[in-house]
Image (cartoon, rainbow over all chains, first blue to last red; front, side, top):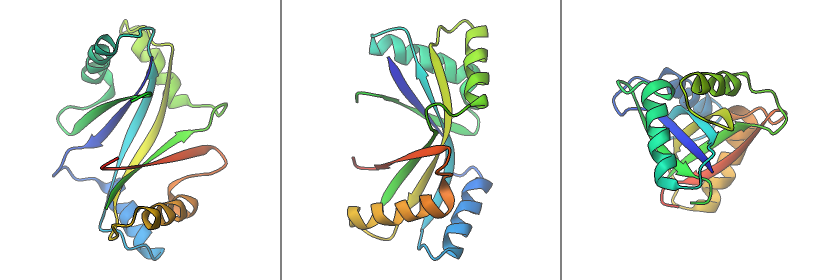
Length: 80
Length: 80
């Protein structure tokens, strides 16, 4: 089954990419109140069990995909 | 209103980051069929009108947030 992991800088953590995007958007004339930049990882897992997939993705996040000190993550399933 | 822009490499476009993640996950023992890496931008716009927000975000994507040659994007609203 397919899932998307959304990884974001935690609140309070400096986000220079987001600041650059926010500043550039304002220079282009867009009235943005805030912008934060994170990343996403689409994974395709050989299981149809959502709980099993979630457990696996949580381990992936702990071991590779995120830095838990400064990032939080959210798991979204393709058919959700 | 808050929205998230999900930016992904288009199908068929080489994704070296995704390949590296996929390879690393396999080395860690995870059976992943595929992994693709993209980015996300959370924006906070001073409008409560979803159509207006969507139109603004589409212009942001064209002008700054995405490279339309190699990337596709999707807009998700916080309360959706």
